[in-house]
Image 1 (cartoon, rainbow, N blue to C red):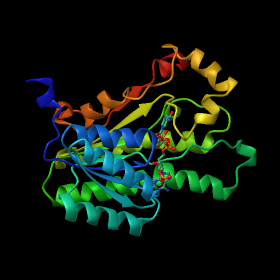
Image 2: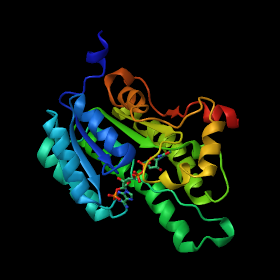
Image 3: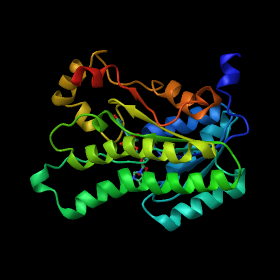
Image 4: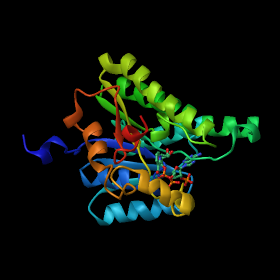
Length: 257
Ligand SMILES: NC(=O)c1ccc[n+]([C@@H]2O[C@H](COP(=O)([O-])OP(=O)(O)OC[C@H]3O[C@@H](n4cnc5c(N)ncnc54)[C@H](OP(=O)(O)O)[C@@H]3O)[C@@H](O)[C@H]2O)c1
């Protein structure tokens, strides 16, 4: 089998949340470049539209869907829209998320619930709906969730985010177990630090640069460093992989252990 055939996504329908910037924008581009029709989901419609135009200009197929992932009615509309346009999504990447830095003693109930709602609850509900539709459509499917190195370790000020991302790893395992026999695989990618809107200010600060020096490979993740993990988990190259979290972090988690 040639590598290109193993990773070919022609005929697949992908839905990527948090596709308006950062890692999700790249995920959408990579899935489209390898043959999938891709629905890009986020709140910033203009950004989604611009990215769709770039994907189409490169010969891909893409549509923009404006939705807040914490809004269940918007979620149902998003799935309906993509299904009408391209058929049942067979690859769903739950990537929308936001970091937050608040010390535990200062955390309000509202803030705690906001982070958990976005970074964990939405991953459950979008996975649940994706799996229901994949099973109803008789399609084999792959769900890929974005976890984090903070799924495995903590630093000060990240209690809610780290708990949510640890939850994503456990959720990935729990769903994989219930869905394996139904033909739906569920895996996660745990990125180390990649400079995006979520963390640019921090990673470019003195503290961030010190963190960079502590990464065994001596650098932050670069554009493209997650492409291989995504394609492995989304394609038939990963046909027998489920319940796993692929850590892509330049050795950061190993160094923490
Ligand atoms: N960058 C890193 O170092 C790193 C490391 C580990 C894990 N991660 C995870 O990777 C994922 C992507 O982060 P990123 O670094 O690419 O940051 P980013 O550039 O800020 O992207 C976050 C994405 O999530 C979307 N989003 C946020 N809240 C949303 C909501 N309520 N509904 C719909 N979409 C929403 C944003 O779109 P809109 O604002 O347009 O809605 C945006 O597209 C997140 O889950 C993050 O926790 C990132």
